[in-house]
Amino acid sequence: MSRIRDISQTLRPSLPVWPGDTEFAFDRTWKMEDGSPVNVGRMTMSTHSGTHGDAPLHYSATAEDIASVSLDPYLGECLVVDARAARGWVQIADLPDLGGATRVLLRTYERFPHDQWDSDFTAIAAEMIDWLAGQGVVLIGTDAPSVDPQESKTMDAHKAVLANDMRILEGLVLDDVPPGRYELIALPLKITGGDAGLCRAVLRELPDA
Ligand SMILES: N[C@@H](CC(=O)c1ccccc1NC=O)C(=O)O
Ligand SMILES: [Zn+2]
Ligand SMILES: [Zn+2]
Image (cartoon, rainbow, N blue to C red; front, side):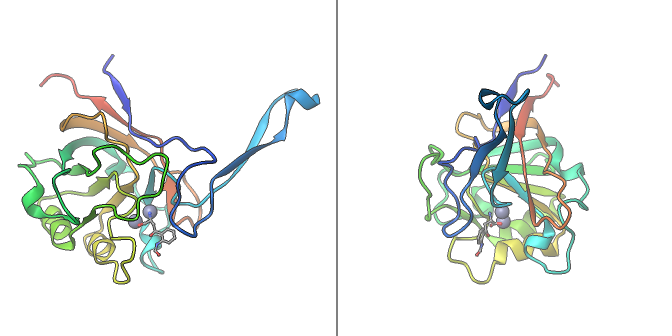
């Protein structure tokens, strides 16, 4: 069996969230310790908690919700890129030869900030998104919480993603992943009207070519 790498954040009460957004909360509706035959939990969270995929509806009021998008972009061969040297924005010059990859995951963090919110994350240049689309890329993933800077009002990278009908994964954990090719499996939850869907994201090693 090929090795599976979990590249998801762990959902837990201390999960850092976008400033002002809903904190992640989990508790139990029914508890075995109270005599229930089973434990049953409930959660409150933002649709952008932890590792997730944005729906086009997040950045375009009339676009598809997360229940309506095709799953094809979220499943299949990808290229993990070490973009740790990028400052401010990941740019075209930070990319290696894609070798025909149609899904690209960017590692920007030396160490993923599991315990505190990082407002100064590395965004993605809109020109790079247009360029990637021209190369046939259908999905861009990042370990940052957004493809645009936190204080962006223009959302240029999200707009480039919309214009090119691409998909985005945000909040990946790529700390221990050597750059290279993998099989990506990261299916967003199917939520009617959802502007995003939480993902359990994994990478599987490809069989030797
Ligand atoms: N991960 C999200 C974050 C995001 O945009 C956001 C999340 C909560 C509250 C406000 C947000 N964005 C802009 O104001 C995104 O970039 O799609
Ligand atoms: Zn998001
Ligand atoms: Zn986003």
